[in-house]
Image (cartoon, rainbow, N blue to C red; front, top):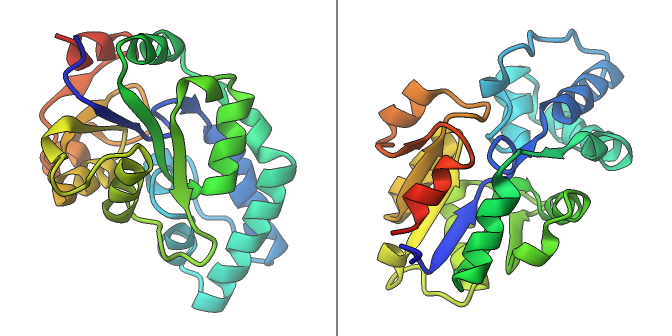
Length: 220
């Protein structure tokens, strides 16, 4: 039996192996702006946070350059980057089990919503989700504290009264922090791109080493 009514999955590093496409899109945008490339070997710096924050904080860009960087990134990602996504092994079985048990399941990602929808389609699992929820172009919905309530509503739930029936799954401290801010349970995945210690620092206590481990954590 499923422990939760509403199950929210982060996308990058939780459902999808996506680092290559994200990195190439970032490199393209930075080079196009004529800026020096920062060290992008540490995926924890830019897989997970909102895109605009990556340009501001990781690249040290001005607000204008950051906005331009976002546009360049999205153009390249739309054309090439999104095709580098690959579903983690074992995830489809978890999603099928959730569907069979009647849980409401959503993608809850800081990625631009249109891209998130396209990626879920490319991964071949769109039929296993009841909603795909992502960020807006204007940045008004980009943090997990805003995305989690949005996703719960999209699934037909109440973000205030249904908190005990909601779980967020993710691989970064941004996911853990958002779950804590929203008062919902959090399951940290160790196989993604984020830092385990950083998730622990945001209160994460339950960890899945592999996608298959999610089965024992989501079901009684």
